[in-house]
Every structure is written in structure tokens, then in C-alpha cells.
Image (tube, rainbow, N blue to C red; front, side):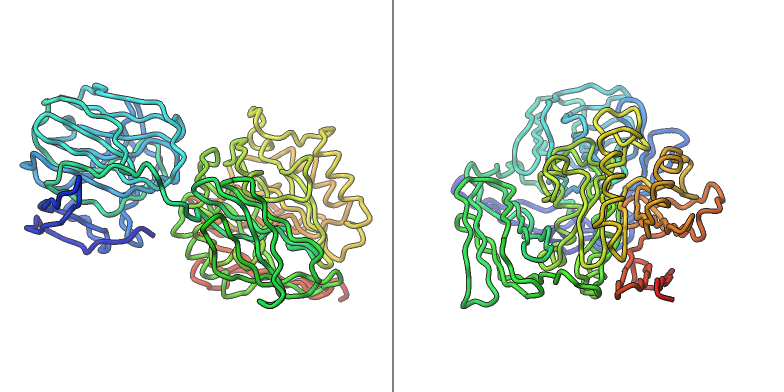
Length: 566
């Protein structure tokens, strides 16, 4: 989480010291807040679109709007505060936008039809500096640029009739305009259901420090574990700049081995082979001058019949919720984690760290995760880039043996989006369908004590207004025919447990996405439907399975038990 300032409730006479161009400068802080209190008494909310209502609120030190309010002229909702007499000042706000629609800041705000605004859209890769005068919007400057980050710091510096705007200490526009000479400050969104604001400051300082031309090499996320399947393990991590890849590992600090690749990359992937089964290994990663702490992982024996895994899905959007769930996951010390997809809301952006890797950093450094692809990957290359898969010819669908269980991961987003060409075909007769039927009937799958399918889009749901007919008509009969024990899905942001023809159907889409609250139908295949953020714990012991589902605060909400020898 971004470093917080002390909350200030009134205009202050406070001075900050800033180093710029070899000189110490003093600037008066007029107002600031870090949202560490929940009160919005100083703020005025304006919803621009008739019949739509925003949901501005403070949660865990952030000012948040999680509604998709939006309309023409990129107007949605905004919230303002401050003094109408502020004239020459610099406004700063830290922003996290997990959605990739419009988000930004307002300044020299006179009323809801007269102000300046600076905002961006990650989806369209656009930046706008505009003025609104008597309700009419005029673009003062705009630019096309890919916006890969979820976390940004916005600045607007206004001095007389000069306006300068920045993101992350990079100046984007400087214009001259005197339509609005003074006014308040504000924050705005349009069609953005993942808007988080923090550390808003207004000061008399007019020169924003520019970004360094030589950024320092840093770990962006990781290390994190993949494919810890017995005699091998894959270590991955990401750096902000290209660097070499090196892993040191061993059963103890006295038996350390080293694997190094001198090719420079930002996404690093190193496979450790010929490991001893059922052993704990130490490891650390190195990229040029960067050296991580020592971490550990444990390999699994081939005949393992007792293990625990966490099941959850749809961690996109609300990184605060995901962080809370991650802190709960740690307590159960699972052997591995299964996610049914939608790890990041704007999957085409390269920044999956904000929503996924950073909230899970304490878990994934010691525990491998296996994921299915969801619709929010948008045909992005990042899913295959950020994870390592055993199937190199088709990485988005694959299978693996873990102990006495066989897992099949599918790429089935096209079931809900049949008109999208960037989703992999899964219909009857497609390469993926033929592969699935072959996998289900394989000796490995049929001889395993447990056979699981992980597919983002579910077969049955009471929370969805859509009926996933192709899943029901084409895939549910396969699951029945080949004795699948359970199908794990997400996509629906709720928890549902179903049972049909000997197969359990679990929807566990409550790890961060905007929640579904309303059941739209009652179907016989679903026995339990629950709204709310959650995660699941699955314990395998030989031919018995214990399933538990917990709320975000750790309260048990559902459970069932299977004993195949009973």
C-alpha cells in the first residue's frame, strides 16, 4: 500500500522542503488528506449522468468508487473539496485504477460546469487535458500512449494562466489558458469500477520534480513458484528493467547450486531439474545487482495421497480484498493453490502486480499456483508470459498430475463470449475439445483417485442471467461419462455449490471482483448460492476429500465431505 500522510482537516500553514535544481525551496501545504478516516464531510459528490448513482466511500485508507457510472463526453461522477479562492497551486493525488476506463483529477473547479480536468484511459491508451466552461467541454491537449500501470501519481500545477500536468513525475502537457483563474480540486471517474484515490495534497509549489533518466533496477514482483511437481520446480520473477536471470538453490546453504542465464529479460523463468522428491529446498533469485532473500519450497512425492490446496478465483479489481484473502490463505499452509482465472481486471495491461502478484507475494514465494485463463485476459500475451505451463503447444489449456489427483485446466471464455475472435475455440470438434476428451479418457486421468476440471466459465449458476448452454450440453455429459469428481469455476462473483450426475460444480469467484448479489433463478443443479468475498480449502487424504468455504474474515460458510471407500 502507498505510504500514508497524516490526515489534515483544514487549511494549514505548514511548510515542506523540496530539493530542485540545486536549491532548497519552501512550499506552503494548503490542504492534504490520506483518507485514514472515513468521513467525507469536506467533499461534495456530483453524479453527471441522470439516473445513475456513484458509490464514493472510504475503505482501508483509500477513497473508492466501484460503480460503472458513465455517459457522453466522458462524464461520469466526480467529488470535490477545498477552497474556491485557491489560485496558484499544485494538486497531487496517488491513484490506483484496476479498471482501465477513464480516471483523473479536477482543478480550478468553480462548479459542476466550470473546471479543468486531466484524465486517462488505459483501455484506449489516451490522455486528455480539457476545460469545461458553462458545460461545454474543450480539449486543450491530448495524446495517444499505452498506459501499462495501474498505480499512478497525478499532478496538476497551475500558475497564473500556465497549466502543467504530470503522471509519475513525467510532464505530459503544458498549455496556456485563463478560462478559470481559481477554484477547488476534485477527482473523477467515467465507466471505471475500480477507482482508488489516496494522498491528495494541495501546495503552493509549482515545479514538479521530473522522473530520473536512469531508473534504478528493482524487483517488480516475485519470486513466485510454478510447476513444483516432484523432481522439478520453476522459479519466476519480474524486474522493472531488463536484467539477467540467476537462481541459487539447495537442500541447505552448504549444498547450493547455481543456474544462470545471461540473456536480459524483465520476466524471468528458471526451471530447476533433478530435484529430490519430498524434500524442502532453499532458493533465492538474482538479477544483476539485485539479490532476493532466501525462500523455500517443498517437492511432492510421486505417491503422495495427502495434501491441501486453496481454491479461489476472480481476484481482479479489488487489491485490498485480495490482500485480505491472501493473509487468510497463509494460515492454512497449503501445498499449492488453484485459481479459476481473471487475475487482473485489465489483462491486456502489463501491470498484473497491483491486483495479483503483490497481494499474493507472501504466499507465492513458498507455494506454487496453477491458474486457468479467464475472459479478462482479453487475448493478452501476459497470461502465457507471466506463468509457466507444461503444455508448450497450447499454454492456456493443460493438465498435470499432483499426488493421487489429476487436474485439467481449460480455456473456455469463448463459451460466454462467442463473438470474440481473440478467445480460444472450445466447441465440439475444436482442437481443445478433442484434447479434453482424450485427456479425460487417458490412463493417468482414469487411474487417479481424484479427477478435477478447472474452467473459468461455469456450467450452472443461479447468480448469472446467462445460461451457459454449450457447457451444459457439450461438456457436462463428458464430465459425467469420464467420472470427473468436481468442476471448479469462477466468472460469477459469488459462491455456488452444485451437484449433477455424480459431479460437483463449484463456483468460487469471490476474491476481488465486483460482487454479484442477486440470484436470478432457481435451478435444481445448484444447492447453495451465497454472495460475498470468499476462498475455499480442499484437503485430500487418500480417497477422502474435505471441502470448506470461508468468508474473507475466516468464518466457515459451507462444507462437504466425500469418502469413496464408504
